[in-house]
Image (cartoon, rainbow, N blue to C red):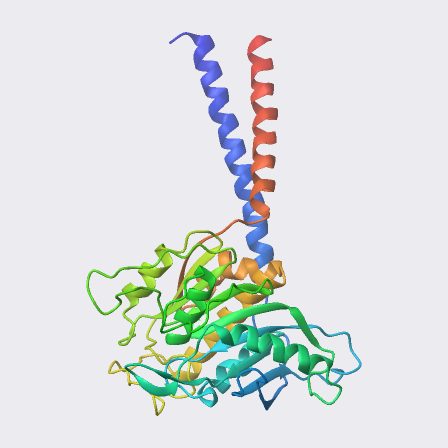
Amino acid sequence: MCKHKRSVNLLKLKALSVVTTFSLVVLNMNKTAAATFNPPPLFTDVTSYTTNLSTTNGAADIYFPNPSDLKTGNYSFPIALLLQGANVNKSDYSKYASTVARYGFVVAVPNNERTLPPLGTGLFAETSQINAVLTQMRAENSNINSPIAGVVNTEKLGLLGHSFGGSVGLSAIADVCLPRFCSTPASLPDEVAAGAFYATGLARTANVLPVEYIPISNSIPVALLKGTLDGVIPPFVTDGTYDNIQNPPKTLITLTGANHYGITNTNNPSGPSPDRNTPTIPQDVAIETLARWSGLFLRASILNDKDAFNYIYITGDATDPNVTVISERVPESAPTIGLLGISAAGIVINYARKRVRN
């Protein structure tokens, strides 16, 4: 190889080294800034009350932040609808719902009793609850006698779900009306901006191998959360469902040591089928962890909270010892880093060429 070519190749390598270093510095600056983010809730006080949904006549528990200046401050809390697991009473989610509310949401947890052959009559979520809760929250927000009058952002709704309820939420996002999850076909309301679901999946034959997963052509961000010891919905079902979510942003959050009921106040609450697997993570730790990741995912997706976004997609995995995360994202910062890197490459390579010519 001639001296001229060796010089050009050497300078190109140096240029690539500079570009790589430059890009890493920019990325590390973002990570350092994100690492300073404090993930605990924004609000310490939460209160709740019970109301009836006017369109279904089902009772719903409503949890909301209760700062001292609630009525005099400028608050507008998005709605989070928690769709219950099969035969899990709404009261069994009070700790999880309260924690999510502390991240700045009005959390609605309704009971939905219906008859579902061949399972009989029990508490089974369905997609019609989404519109029912939206209607009720608009009424509550405009009712001067409501505890949440004037503080609800009725234009923003996040879906949460557990087990059967998670499948209901996913089917609504996928626009698939399966009989067990959907009694009346309806399009997903425009207000729905994100969904985060625990111990769940969406498949036609989840109890028969091979599992026939349903493609989820989503137009909103979706998070799936699972416990490694789930003995009711096998973790591979959640994994397969995640693989069939068609569009990013999407994330799969795994909680080590949690079983199917890591989200409820107690392990194996009365009513639903028990999980024979004993969790190895304390129940309160599981609840707090799931609520934190759910609340921050909703903040990142619904409110464009950049600190929450960084926690979900960049730093949270490393800082939470109980959690592992895989994700696909479309970060706002990526084009900026790419353009800066390309610009730096152009400057350095052009400088190298000038030196060779001289």
